[in-house]
Length: 355
Ligand code: UD1
Image (cartoon, rainbow, N blue to C red; front, side, top):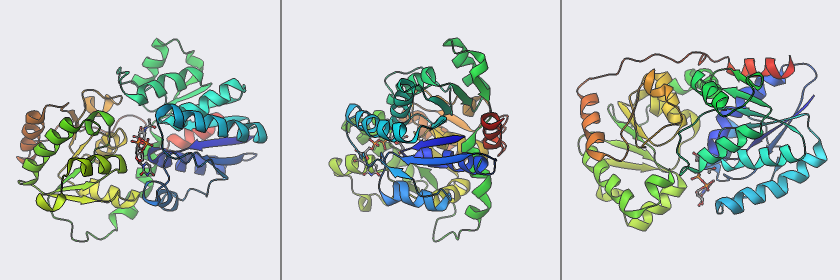
């Protein structure tokens, strides 16, 4: 059985790693890895391959950045040639990035079966580019591997045959469980005892100058109370530079380049709280039991709120500060690890694919 995995952007890498490993122990499986090149910097891509023990891609399409249409179209045009040459039995796509939907579209037109890892998540917000990618990818997929029961319900509501849907758990948590001991062994390296860890990259937060300015002002006020460690995504770096925001002028906010996986995991587990607009970080903080304040109006990962440590604060920056004060005063949400976030999701996927 020839399996082809497609990855492109940072959040794909921690998902492909355990699935690849689980499949590599099965008999009669040949695996091919395609990197679209959507992310290309060493600290957005290369270092993750190294730390997550992902083999070097067999093919790198090298598409790089562009508008959504341009990026998606370039991936499709290049990836089609790879698929026609390789004729895989099944193509695995991950998450909700442009590389995911582009690969699913190509395969479905070539009548090659598609498996979607992390299927069924919905924010019910089509202003988010990822939501479009999720809906389209799920409609085109033949095997849908879901991380939580709400995802199964979403897919069934959209008319997807229940026989295609498999609740397997969360592959990103497989990676976390596997690498947490290594992350824990990293030295603290001058990191303060109490700090807030911050990430921001959603277009809705960073692309509009006045929204970003207002958000940074709220964060500066928080940073005066507890230091903020802020590894900055390249998209956000450009927008911050455009605003003329200088880290040196705001002593409470410490700007860094994007962090490698292990370093970021170590920062997450030690943080007093995390402020983010990422999807994956809502899940990781839920597993780690670290309070998470999500600067979004909605989430495609509601289980992190109902069972986990996540709270949505939207763009209400007074609420953000209020919730943070409560955390600093020692208040904690009761929380549990969601079902099947147990480090075995990839083994379940491998079993279903090869079974
Ligand atoms: C993409 C995903 C998003 C995911 C995020 C994680 C889509 C629609 N979005 O958003 O779901 O949460 O990745 O990071 O697929 N850039 C670099 N170096 C890189 C990559 C990007 O400098 O290695 C810069 C480029 O200037 C680019 C910008 O970052 O224009 C944004 O990159 P892009 O891939 O378009 O989207 P992300 O915001 O990273």
